[in-house]
Image 1 (tube, rainbow, N blue to C red):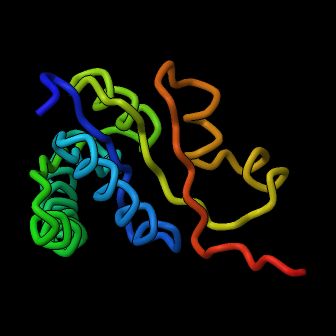
Image 2 (cartoon, rainbow, N blue to C red):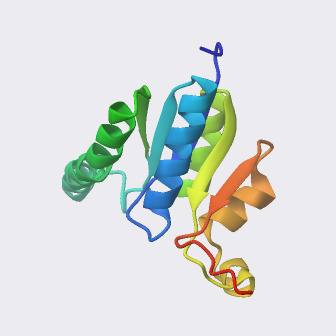
Image 3 (cartoon, rainbow, N blue to C red):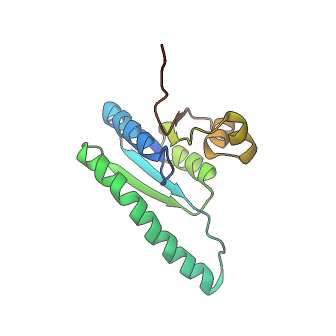
Length: 147
């Protein structure tokens, strides 16, 4: 195993998440490094009873989202680290990539137009602007090649 290296995957239930997971598992297996599955969600509030309820709900949601991804990686013989971060997704992925010395950050995309993604601030666009590490953007569906 490459010492101190990993593949970081931003994982949620977005359309590109499953394809990104498959590719991240393949990369982690090829490089014999762990897959760090990152799910970043900033809770709506950080104080009071509502914050505690929100944290419990987010933890349960994270577990339901992560469980199938962890099972898929483990079935492929890839070690998985689940990293749930109280942060917005792009900063969470960048922090995890630094902490786990990522070879690459892998994220799924929604096959939206580049202009729409730039205007709405997609995670992949933010990562491409902010990350010092390579970013692999995986489209939700494979493009149709004509000809």
